[in-house]
Length: 326
Image (cartoon, rainbow, N blue to C red; front, side, top):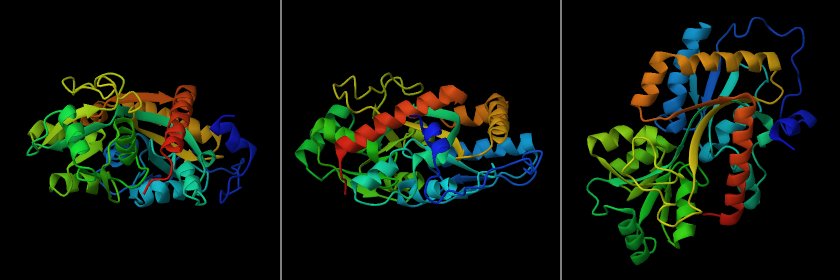
């Protein structure tokens, strides 16, 4: 049963039951549309969300403010949108960690703050494998050297993330499991602070989406060692994949997609999707995204639904394989 069908079959906990009727305000949107990013500024969701919001403002001619609701690896912001009125005026720019957090909560004997059935996939904007980077001052110059060093020094190699089970934590946990490493996890409130910690020399490495790190790789401040994709990443063609090196279970993609609360009327969903199609065709938006190191991967409707369900199922299996993480 798909996430969308589950949403239609039952009201999830805390979800407003009101459905739009003929009394729905028209035309949509006629007031500000809040875009929630479940992390502090500077991370992948924020890097993509801001140019999307700015372009939607041009199209809709209403404000589209970004609301950063960080904490709990994105769980707080995700839950806020899941419980918001299903009227299209509160949207979520989500990361790939969003569908796995409820399962992670159950593994840790907690009641999930939200369920995936409370959120509807609207539009995918980007999907890239994460990239392992170290400071340019690091003596580690290859993924082979990194793994050898980590094996010599259990808990001696540290990495930052956006929180336990976040989109920056999961790839490192999967690599540690695949390569038999004991790494030191240092969680922060979001990808922005995690990157700042690496640049400040507080940790040894970071797995990040390409957008936030691209400028620092170009400037020579950071050195990429490997990526988590099946094929080499555009813009990082000289960087090997972990799969190439034999770590076949270390495959992870950090994607950014727009979601709405379940029960958002189909007419409103259609308007949002139509506007997002205009966004990805906007020259200024494409320039900002490409210059920022993000690979555009626009999908909506059934195409995004299939992508989302397949990736979510794979990530839930990964969480179950990893089990409880501290």
